[in-house]
Image (cartoon, rainbow, N blue to C red):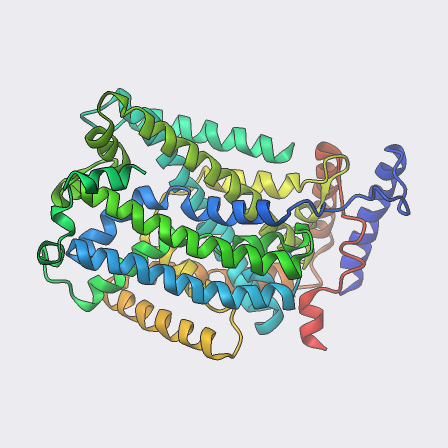
Length: 462
């Protein structure tokens, strides 16, 4: 670290000490300003399940069926998707106890591959992955809330955007501070009979099969998010693996049964033509009580947005702590001990994105870098390498856009991170913004960070 960076950090610490003194908090007190370890086993399971289910099961069935070509094969894709997710979760359980730091993928990639690759992951995540995923979930929430008022058409564009924005803003503020078996018993399982289930609507190519798995992977995304808040988990070496082992099989079972429920109540053509699958399912099953379904979906997506904001903000927090983002984002509120600047950045990014298939490609490209050289992760990597290869072949423009966006981070890394001797006016401007941010948001560095934790990039250079 050069002298300019050291001086800037020291001045931020001096400002921090003034705020601590004015707040009556002393470094040696038991109530030191730091991220609190308050996530137990039950909360950890809730984070994983809530982040996975979110909105994916209400969005992806249509895409999976369209690319798979038949009911039976789409169910196979869902089950195999859960199995692949389980393989990845085994890798992350080991990584989480080996490198017990918040930040998930970013921390592991930075530790193993160095600062540049870690920064590219962070750049892709902050620019497109998490903001876009949050936007998709928020739009799903608003669409299902408004759908009962517009049963025969899509809700107005402006209404869905305003409601989704209000939802994200509210949750940002919060963070800162047996029907299936009934249908089957009645004989509604024509689409699930073997001779019907494997009648292909269209013959799927290898590329289409790969896209079906990618659609399912979107629904399963979020299984690794507990690793983003490792430092806030109580006894992470025990609770992190346990939460993963409990949650992944449970979600796979829920997803499979949900799709069986869909196919037992509507034909494949009806599912493909539906604007909101769960609403159509509710109309078929519940009749006059069909309004229950959009409310249930809205609650699920609402929780999913909350989970994404909670975990993605810790990615920004970890990146800033390592010097890959402005240091202001590595600070937490003096009283509530929440990373308010990082949360606000995540919220701001959501407002400027639109969903693109390139997001799925980019997120998968990086999430499978964070593995260790064992049989399970090797099998996992080979599977996704083949799948991403076929996806690149089937959708070269879309996947190419994801790669281009990711590679734009290379010059940003060398200018923003590696270039140490920046002009004085740039350093002064950054220092003034950091000082203003500290005063505005009443935030300081956690008292054990960053001075007490050796940055991952420095460890990898030793």
